[in-house]
Amino acid sequence: MIFSNKFVKPLLFLISLVFKTFVLFRIHAYKKAWLKTNRVKTPVISVGNLTVGGTGKTPVVDFLVREFQRVQKYPAILSRGYKRKNAAIQQRFRFCEDNTIDPAFFGDEPYLLAMRNPEVPVYVGSSRTITAHSAEENDNPDVLILDDAYQHLSIHRDLNLLLIDAVQGFGNRHLLPYGALREPENQWKRADAIIITKSNLASSDSVMQMLQHELKVSCPIFNFNYEVQGLTRLDGKAHLNLKEIKNKRLLLTSGIAQPKGFERLLEQHGVEITGTIEFPDHHDYHGEDVQKILNHQKSLQPEYVLTTEKDAVKLKIFPELHEHIWILEMEIIPDYYWNDFFAEFLCTKFESLKNEK
Image (cartoon, rainbow, N blue to C red; front, side, top):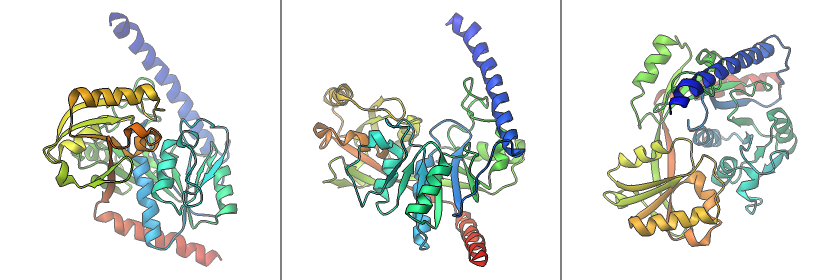
């Protein structure tokens, strides 16, 4: 511990300064056009963050898909497919056409998005520009939604949404690896709007005060609540509502970036959490992990074992869990002002496209 305090922390801080220099130079290179920002024909919306993991990007992408479908616009989703096994290969997936793909080869988050939106094509690939061109050629969408692309500066975006977690904020406000920031706080300036996610799990006042008073943010800021929609058993053959788990003893298992938010959400609904099993984010589950879950269930005797939708896409391949685990299904509730902002974007962007034609 003495070694850690005296040597490791200063070293991490020094590395974070070097990383900051690299990040700022890269941003400057795009501003000066030393590095190229590509434009595509289709309107592009980017969803991203300044910190690593856990801000709720995937639920926001899912929410935006439904927003566009509600106004009869056909979206396509572009994702990197973080931690998928064949990361070098670009893939297209549409759940209504083929639901047999292994989520380990496609990525848990894009797989979840495809599963929740079976008519929507989802592309994974390291280059958003290449996948954007592929989507335009193969699917001719009305809009491209980029998942986790705030730092992906090689493609122009028509709406840049920056997400900030109400619980975590910017952490210790230092860059990696000393802190959680991918780039300096002042890079909020590239955003067209900021969304404070999970506003119902923590007071967003401190984040709002930091944005408005310290960082002098001038773009619109919205609060998005993350609410429980219901629970479905892993085999899909049984369903529960929130009232049915109130005052029940629960065991939680997850492999997500911010498991405390998972706990906090359920605690708000009057349940007793008897234990938690936490795996790394994007965890690739194996037999020993399944046995660990079953052993905890046997020893703690909870009335229900709950997991997240992201984890469920990988846990479904284990039949021994099908009748033991329940999936917590989420929905996003935006604040009142979002509807006006979204309507204005639709009117401005799609009307201008009509005029160009």
